[in-house]
Length: 157
Image (tube, rainbow, N blue to C red):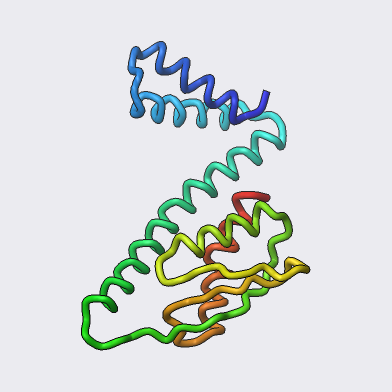
């Protein structure tokens, strides 16, 4: 049985024992199950599960912060009379290997207002990104690589 399935079953058992059949009860049971599995782990698969789950938990606030900042920047540009855009296309060299990793990166970039993933090169080594605000192309590439790409690599590997 995988650690994730065990965690889900422990969360459902927690809900049944506490008679709390709602999202908060499931979340509490999931956290309880996470710590039970963490304390009783015996192999590298459960250690990998915990590492991934913590990476996902760290990714969510980062993504929300990036979304809020990008929304505020676009909203400011729309509401002010002066145009602040410096649009352009940058080539982001990829360290990600699988289609899933590249798709997650492209999706995160596209979901962030002001940026859009355009194309992945045929050799899957470059992602072309259109951005509304490019003050320094190298800085944008560095932000993508150290932000989204690094966190996606931590989650998937």
